[in-house]
Length: 118
Image (cartoon, rainbow, N blue to C red; front, side, top):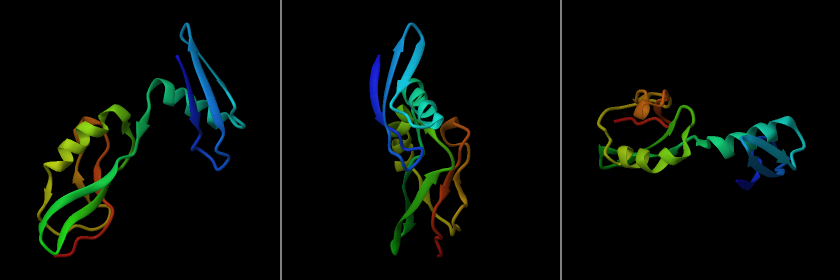
């Protein structure tokens, strides 16, 4: 398996080439060790922090911006969005308040990224 990535770990934006052969991953194009770590993770277990919004019950503020407090598996993004689509915030929250604890069992919380005053 071979893939090409643009590294997002530092401002260099290196073009990384990662290949896996017989369980060994080789990475080229990185200017620092962080690029190699990033490419290996992207090849074997890509993860993302999810940033989106949750519906509220308040007509004057119909959505609240939220994000996961850490990364979740990339292939879980769409299932997570379906779960979030079913959530409704019905009370005041402050930025950083937990909307859903241990979201989908990933060990990260879904947190508000803005205040919701009612």
